[in-house]
Length: 170
Image (cartoon, rainbow, N blue to C red; front, side):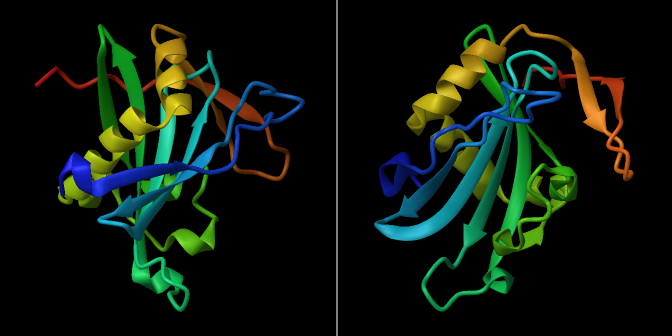
């Protein structure tokens, strides 16, 4: 796959997040074509403060009219920019904000996604081709190292935990 083969089409505009705990949360989406054919969709979230990351879920596979979720697989990444370089770190997609969106297909572990270079290339193409992601990466750079993570219980309480450590640069 080359950058010339990939086309990014912006989907929905960001919308306000949770009114009680994260009104700045954003949820844009977009579409990826490869050689003129539907190839992937993506969802993005960021919060300009708590995590310092941009979270991205990419679902790759068959998006033709008669396709089903069984024809697709999804990988999740957290991105952060520092000193003009964006790093995408894969994590288990079943921990993603979009884990319950059935149309994305099989949710890959971070290890599975790392074995498929197509996903990392798509993350980089999305960051380069979607001005909303570029802005989010720029504006979240250097923000807090503390994340608020929901505890998945009926009460919806939150706990603070340290953000994952960045791996050493390549």
